Length: 157
Image (cartoon, rainbow, N blue to C red; front, side, top):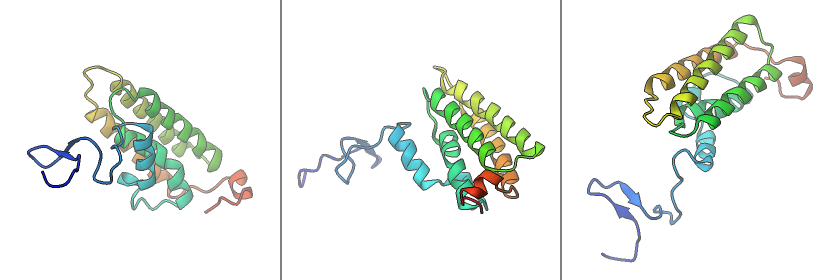
């Protein structure tokens, strides 16, 4: 083998272990670092969602947790849902429709979180339901207004 590269590739050309081409160990799927990197990318349903940057930043941990949560991440997914829901309620004027959408999204996210805690987990359907519920929250947030406290802090949009 030419050079002393420790990069290991399978017969399909995919990375199978060792360090990444940059020389650093890859992030363990579902690790806090992987979740943080996902939050920085904030792709998926937040991309082009039409939310103000502040609300996009508030929603990012919840969306990333749902999109990237893997087996054994029950607590992280549930915590992201509940903390983001509480943060939204502290920052926007919450009408009854938004309040109901947030509650339904938390329930769907907790259902996903519980599924991720099972040995024989099948998270595809609960993940899709959680994403659909969060998309409903996002739809309501497009027209939401910052509350008085948020405006007082200069965080309005």
